[in-house]
Length: 391
Image 1 (cartoon, rainbow, N blue to C red):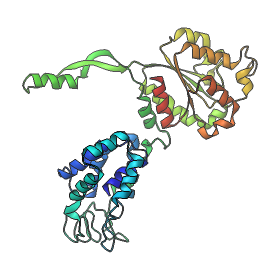
Image 2: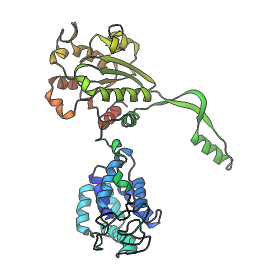
Image 3: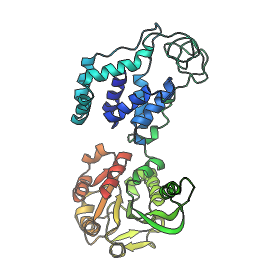
Image 4: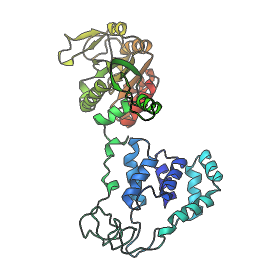
């Protein structure tokens, strides 16, 4: 069952390594956790998941693999054939992981070791308070009772107290496939960080305190350091109005998240495509108009450019003078876009339009080409990829 758990984690896209899996097995052999499902769940999650984005996926795999460990009739979990597991290994393990298995004596040796780990409970257990089984007060026992038990092999609840933490799926909103929230945006934006020391000496230097305390023979010697600030500088351009009204909430979440994460941030607005003017307040845009050339002169090349928009418009707005739907533009939108890209060394476009619809809009294809492929969907994964591109 444990090897199947490992392979299903890998199949689900969780980057779990064989070394982490063997560390989990070693922890079990050393009785690091209590022998109940909830303790094993937390131990396995700690050992195998290194990125909070995969916590929800881990919960789903855990629930699927360990559901019904002992059936109503007392049958043990199916013993997976070694040949089947070896086929899984060929599919999911890297060459390095296969070499590691060989260094441990081969797959048969690994399976033999796992079998020994499970021998203490290879028979059906009934009654008692420690092992998996039925009756008694085991946290797993069907027909038993435990304040935080897990029912196994029982058609309905008897004491109405069963709790399975992995089925609660408390981490759904951290998964890259889930809807954007301020939290998930902030997690993705933190990929783009360059710390610099600023301000007064008031932040605790934990590493320095530990070193100094050790050097003093255990006497606590608190060290302080200057506060660290994210030194990355961003110019953000937001498309608002028209078709972007459908994505106003996601744009607002991104705006709030970026305001929180970046100290050096300059935000401007435009409609459909960038032209000779940008705006600092779209509610009163004619009074808040700023020359695009002035923005280029004000913000140096070391700023990163982030453009947010659905890129959905008439191709004429990009390719021809006078194509703008709001005013007569002397130069095409693509000319102004190129000026931005020539000035800022690093730039990305975040598109809230679902990626599967991009091929239906010629304007998206035109701008994606001008961005040289640096257009990303406004999803958790897309935002994460964009921050990597800007790093």
